[in-house]
Length: 381
Image (tube, rainbow, N blue to C red):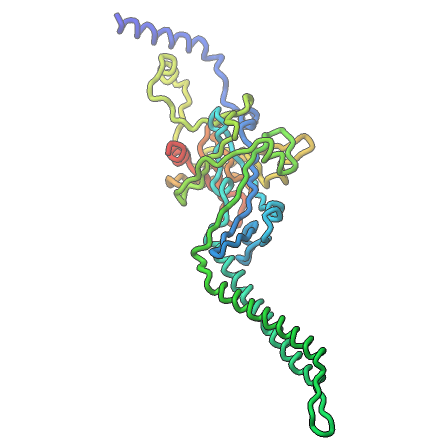
């Protein structure tokens, strides 16, 4: 009886699908995909500075490393450090209804490594030593000039008796004592600098992350960090997997925001699914091949291109698969600029296939994405 009922169910499903086949929607255009999915893609702002804790107990602050490897905006004032925070923008997209977004590790976590900051600190300490040694030379020169000046306050009479202007001499000697004390203090400081173990320097990144939604106004850091603050949930520890998971602090994805699916299709089929597959009506996620069309939805060049008179706007750029995935990366000919890091890359059906993370040096038209297999593995960790 159960077998007969199952056969009848399958037959009915096929009949209904055959009857309604003419009503099936055609494949979406890129414009339709963009219209549906743009609401799930956000502009990310990461505001960061660094605390450098010296073994002496002193704390320095900086905003990062410059092109020469030196500490940028070095200060002893934390309030000043907050004003000089480095501002990094990128792209992220929603993957569930609990406010979780996927992006790149280099967007969500500090880019400067502790080792770079330690080396920068070592350079500063070396420079300070040189400055103090030069200052000591100046102090020694001033001391000698005062020593020579003493002869102006000593006179001899016709009988060879020495007369000293005690008042002026005392003033000169007092100045020499001040110079001598300063010299000794600098010597002590230099010895202290020489005794600092660079490896014992503790680096603490201080980072705030926030997002802005497509078609909203966001022109200053507060529009990101105060209105839609996020926390870094996890960053990949695999050097080859540039992914990070961030989450809105209120853990609520906006109701109108599109949520990108990274989940594998269900193994167990319903009667209707079976019928669709039987009739060739199901578009299952297929393996990518050379030449397949892909699209990227993101914020190329960050706020520079995103900001419009009608609010920030995401862009969609398209291209083709130019090199198949090696398991770690997928190469495609999608034009992209800095700021598109963390953008979702979708196929011709609008399904997520990769996360954009890097470009081929010297060109804007060849970019790399982290393939879906790595995305699933990272989120499932």
